[in-house]
Length: 102
Image (cartoon, rainbow, N blue to C red):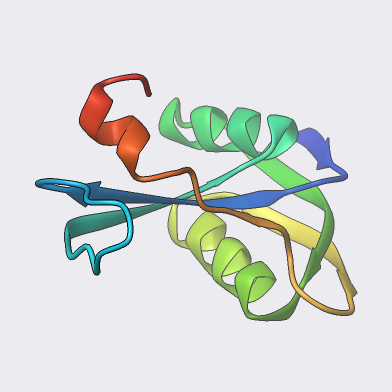
């Protein structure tokens, strides 16, 4: 059993657009959600390799619940300490995907 620790887990939201027009309403064509943090990334890879691991750290709110559910669904055991507020979320600027800079 390998234990990984992530003190600062995160939820990354990636939005795909056909075009980006500043100052206008821009509609997404698809969205993706990624859960991560150094220890969580390691636990995800270990699960994909068929190795047992337990992810430890701090999570909070609906984003923390979603992160934990996704890890368990992917075969990773979890033992997080619940906190207040929400687990941090990142929304990269959508124009980066259009310009190919991601």
